[in-house]
Image 1: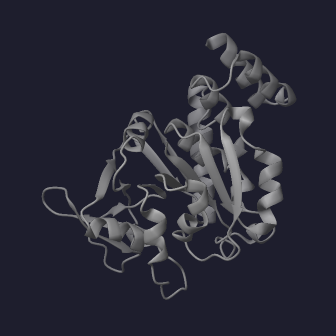
Image 2 (image 1 turned 90 degrees about the vertical axis):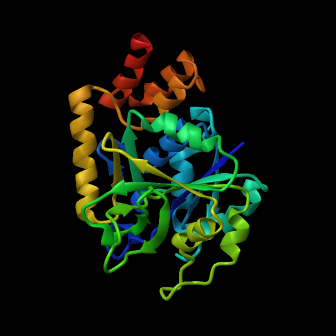
Length: 290
């Protein structure tokens, strides 16, 4: 069974002064904490065992907010990343947790939304070999890891923040790996900025012919909240969609209920302390809408 890893680091402190005090992933994106979004994404992929990796200073805060996950029918465990040593280090930290099995790694500040996303995630999650990543068309590829393709659509290279991008396809912060990932991560040499780069890990799979790239189409939204402007845009996007549709995006209580991980009585208990807010009313409304 594939397990999930969420890296909720504090590496954005230079852009977000508040994250010197508390992790950005504990801040709300419209009506729910940012960390709810990656948890919901992993749940929709069929993942039930999740390790959340965070700074030591944030560990008690995440535990207080998320507990052990049983309220949502999942298992949440915690680990620390004492220094911002790069995304690939998450696979090393999580080695014992993974216990030789495959993984899905998602960044705590990446939000995904789309009607076709769940079937795509479950399909990739069922694949046991190699690595699976995504490609998403952006207007500013130089700010991300960029995937270039040949004329047949086969991935040729992945470059981190290239000055002259070979394509406009960025690699979002959601990765699926087989059981070799932790071992590969240990082989990575730190980059010039002293980090174990996730691009280097993915390139190992590309070099061996075991990388699968899935292009996310126009019907899927990927929101990377790496800057204050992007954070504000994500809040505006979630607000607009939820107000227009009357449906919540990446609400873990609803995801758990829809997947049958919790029943009516458990959902009602989750809604009780939130009845003075629209969030609690929404959860109770799920019982009547079915």
